[in-house]
Length: 99
Image (cartoon, rainbow, N blue to C red):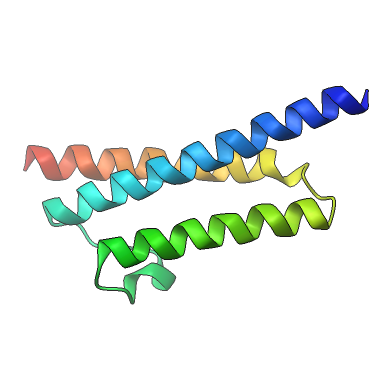
């Protein structure tokens, strides 16, 4: 049972990383098209490259923190939230590219 849990955790962590990378790409594209960043943490950074670096660092910290606290079950919930963020960003890119 523990190997199944480890496999699911690894997959959830991988999905979390992929969704965050998609968020970085879509946010960068949306900003280039004229959109604005709604996340108050990242909106203070004027450079998309700096935003991406900070985002990658934060994702790493979240992964390490949840694994060290043995709360990897939270990745499922984080993935649902990130899926919503990626969907929102995809809509932003679509709306800005059509206007």
